[in-house]
Image 1 (cartoon, rainbow, N blue to C red):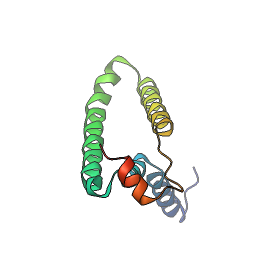
Image 2 (tube, rainbow, N blue to C red; image 1 turned 60 degrees about the vertical axis):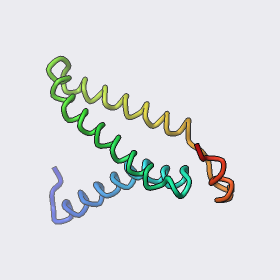
Image 3 (cartoon, helix red, strand yellow; image 1 turned 90 degrees about the vertical axis):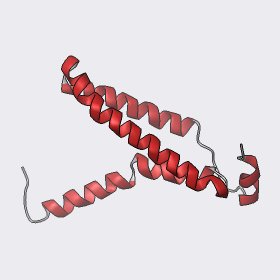
Image 4 (cartoon, rainbow, N blue to C red; image 1 turned 30 degrees about the vertical axis):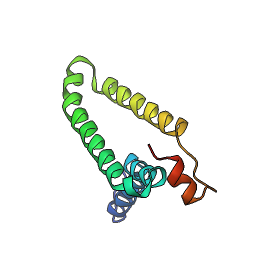
Length: 110
């Protein structure tokens, strides 16, 4: 294994890159883009709550699934879930480029 003085810096850089491209950024970026100004805080809070519930279910479910399926099997299941979530996000995204804030404010109200 290649371990030298640069390994901690490269590890931190890789971690930050992963965090920057992760679901947290997507969730909060979409909440700001899609919801009217008066609902952005509530939408962000709901997104955070759902993310925490998902994290709890994952933390509890991983050991339970691991008893019936091997660890590579559990990781494959989680990978399929992540790919499905990415597909849903991509499929149902709303492109806001070129749209005015006034249009978005009135067209996205419930």
